[in-house]
Image (cartoon, rainbow, N blue to C red; front, side, top):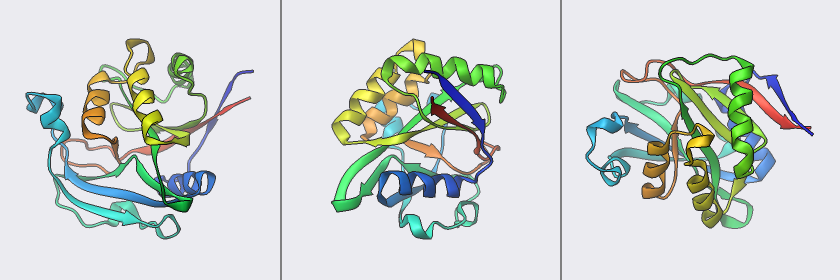
Amino acid sequence: MGLQIYDDSRTIENMLKYLADKNKIKQFEFLIYRQDPIEGYDTFEQAASSEIRKRIKINPKRIPIISQIEKIDDEVIGISSKILCTGGLEKHLKHLDMDFVDSVSDDKEEIQTFLEKMHPIGEYEGLIILSGNGFHYYGGEVLPPNEWIDWIKRAKTPDTLVDPDWCEIQLERGYSILRMTSSSLKPNSPKVLYRVIKR
């Protein structure tokens, strides 16, 4: 049994609708905030508590065009891992942030290497997003809060290629955030590249 990587050109909006249908998600939370470099903070606690100007509750059946949501130029729109599912259950999306600042490509072999390193934490299926200097990962399944904490902690190990500073900030915050738009600091808008399926 192995992993199959397929080209995927769906929009971020359609990716969220797919995850909502798959996991019976009834509400997403979009965040509007200024994304500052981690180096600008003295502690992970400070980075985690950086100001979020606005929170928008989103029904998956009525997801707007994300790039058209009103924001200030140096702000980004992100998505919280916190979601509400059928029955009012609070769960989390499986977000990860992988930084390849020196070199990043959409090469499938590089993606395969990342996914092989994710096997020890039980991650096999999801969507790969090109974010500019790295990749974002959205797992195909969702997790209850206690399992999300354990999963982020396991993802922090050096072997997974996940940015450990990002993991620390999300744990301090109590939920994770991945940006969905560009800004002056991050000029590239994230876009879906691949869907990964276990065969």
